[in-house]
Length: 443
Image (cartoon, rainbow, N blue to C red; front, side, top):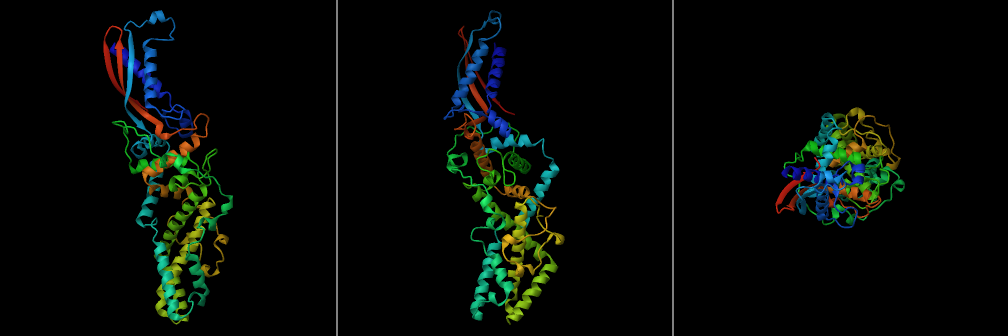
């Protein structure tokens, strides 16, 4: 009797697991049971009823060939199934989903490649390239220029063309940097209502990850999860067919309600990172620092104000780095590569390019064949985003796209489970009763 119950329970649980969501598997290679079963409401009890149905069908041997030969001599019946535990995709800040995503990627990526991404992350973190410190430097320089103008009783910047151009370069563009590096009119105009998706609503909650699951949010696993994201979703230059938002990776990083808003924020981040890296390159180069010193000293002497030379030199460093950075971002959006930290042979503009520049959008230059791609910079940005944000926003994307498919208009990732623990009550027609507790899931 016990052996029969064990077999029937195994068959019933496996039948329930076989009801995984087909679109979620086809699009994202994930196994989850949608407990709404295509309706507007999630019901874990309905999953329990499915288990009860499958077990009773097997206990009664219904539908078998020559049922008289397979008569149920024990007269067993499952009279109740209650759910005592279940893992929802969004449980533990999305760790339940991340576990499956990481498993998908483990066979596809070499550790050597992940180590390269780790190296990029460590360079950015070590040199604080993701910190917005240059804006403070710019404001200090601009304020000092104003104070010197008041002291001299006239506009200092207009005295020499290079100073005026340098001040123009370090000003933050009114519409943002995205408008300087591409034709925004050609971008996707898609918008969403963020509040309709997982990251912005109150969630159904399960009981968390199954016990003894071999998963931890290690840094290597985080890098594998990033690769899963970039493989499964669209982004600028690699839009996903049929997606609601075209720049999905950018949404995962930013979380705004439109493609343009998300890409605009990424352009800002790219510029700030490249600017910080280029400033580091200039101040690390004796040759470039000597160039800025010669020019700043000449201007200070012409103004008969040698005290202002350090301010002018700082302004030139910021402007020179800014000029190079806009070109870098433009190249990245064109599909080219830009090194994280440049060496001398990878630098494009000379210091006198500051004076000769006209408009950012007219900047042009040679194409680089070494360095990081746009997708690589997104990899770096993902390293600095919280696990919860990037996982929940990924599930937003899954909901956006799956809701566009037939029968899935109300699809919710927090209604999807990857494991189930059930208490099963079985009674015999001869007066006996048994209670089993079993936990099954996708391994």
